Length: 65
Image (cartoon, rainbow, N blue to C red; front, side):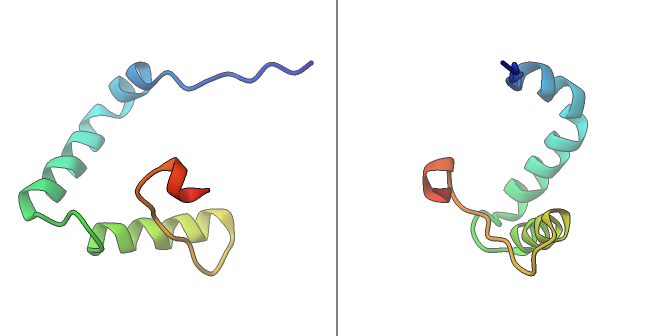
């Protein structure tokens, strides 16, 4: 049986802390919480990454289902 490694959020955060903090503070300082430029950029990059024409950012994993 193949073992699946789970992501450790705390460890991952420390690896990408600077980039994540900068993105968070940029979004929060502009008040761009819903349907703004960061979301559009994320959706375009995600679509390109997975090889599809479109991608949609949603609120949660539950919404994604």
